[in-house]
Each structure stands twice: as structure tokens, then as C-alpha cells.
Image (cartoon, rainbow, N blue to C red; front, top):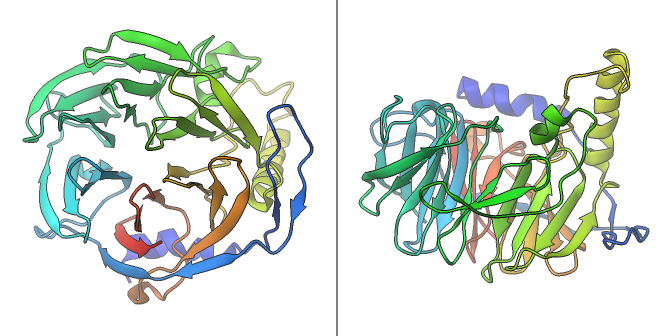
Length: 348
């Protein structure tokens, strides 16, 4: 077994949760109703790969995305400082990127967004900037982001090819930018925190558009997800705090805070990590937590939990659950995941 993947997977075998859950609350705080017997769907990979044809294994990839405009997959292979392009059957197409600080170079790229014109918007985490590449994968331009960013940082683009970035400040959750980095709009109510310098960490969000360009988001430190319409209005906020892994994670967080002298004395910031990946397709929202072996699937229109997915690792890794992963569920027929050095495809 690949040692990196073994170290990644084996601790997760010890985590097992019996899960029941609930209908999500309405934004007005309505109480949650417990649901029993949520169906579980177990899935085996249709195909998987661990390296590119040059023999280089994927190394801490932080993002996989399906591009509806060219029907290909894009992987931000972070510690290899490259973007890898595959077709939908995981066949290698090409790659680009080298480590550096110059124009078009990366220091741990962490996301790729796609435009209707065929351009690519690539987040360059350690260099704290956003690159624009053309459809020929050639560098066009970049602009700096002078804020602290989460290590999985990425952006999204809408039907007008505007860039949507989770850049929390004192009055908004998201910032809309053009390709020069100019601010066009701000929206989204932030979660307040007693120390204002920790607001960016307190408001880290995962987010994605549906086909109608409504924006959905879920939060690392708050057990809710939201829907915004195309005019930036909040449509709903749903609470999933009774999800068993969320309760377990909260207890772990509370214990760590207590070890640091309690919340009143602690002046740092400790992430709750309620969520580690989030994706949207035509009908559903998909949420994963690092301590839990399931992907939870919610109806995107009413926020109701509909099922859980259990993704088996390939047989060469013992067929165990893949556990912590990043994924993209926007394709109509397949789920694409990355986990350590593994890239895999599952039938929905």
C-alpha cells in the first residue's frame, strides 16, 4: 500500500458513527425534527489513478473540479505546484505549472474556476494571488489578495464571468471581483467574533453555484448552509447542527478550548472544522466532515437530508472507506474525488 495513502486512510477506520439526522430548520429558527433511517448508498470506484504518465504521484491535491464548458476535470495538485487536466474517464490530457513567484508560476495552487470564454481563474495560495490563464493554458494576468486565506482557498465564477471570493471582512462574507481584481459587489452577513482580527478565520466558507447561478455555501465553523439568489439576496439558512459528526466535533473543540483556559480567556482562534468539502448538482447539496465516513446529501431546494453516501476505496487499499476527501458532484452522472494521492470516479 502507498504509505502516504495508508497514513491518510487507516486512522479513519477507527471512526464509525451511527447516524440519524433531521429536517433542517428554517431561517427563522424553527425547531429541527429528527428523521430516522436515512438511506445509505455504498459505492465502489468506476476507475481511479494515483499519478500522471510521467510517474509523478499526486501530492496533497486540494481541489478537483468538473468544467461544464469543455467536459474535462481540473486538479490543483498543490505540493507539485501544477494543474492537471483529465478527461471525464480520468485519462490524462495535459498539465501546466511550475513552482515560483513569477507571472504564471505557482506556490501551492488550491483551486480552479472556469469561464464561458474558456479562460481559467486559478488561486495561488502561498503567493496570495489569483491568476488568469487562457484556454490554451497560457498565462494572461494575475492580481494580489492581501488577506489571510484558508489553505484550501478557491474562487467561483458566475454566468457573467465575475469572480466570487470568500473574503470576509467587517461587513460582508463574499466579494465579487473582475479579472483585474477590482471590487464590484459585496454581500452576505458575516458571523461576528469577539476578536475582529479573527473574522476571516471565523467566516471560512465552502461555496458553489447551481446551474441557475444561485450560490450555496457552508461553513467550516458554523453548522449551517445558505442559499443566495443571483441578486445576492439570502433565500434560506438551514441548520444541520444535530448531525452526529458535528456534535462529536463540537465536543472535541470544546475540550480543546477548555484546555486553553476557556473561551473567555482564549485570545487565539481554534477551527471547529464542521465541514471539509461541499458541492452542488442539479438537485442536491453534498457535505463531508473530516471525522465522518459519509457524504451527506441534502435537497438543495428545502435543505432536507435525503441520504448518505459511503465511498469505498479501491481494492488495492483494502476497499475501506475513503474518508476525508475533496470532491466535485456537479457532473450529472458521476462524483469525482481526490484524497491524498488518489483520484477516483464514482457513479451517482
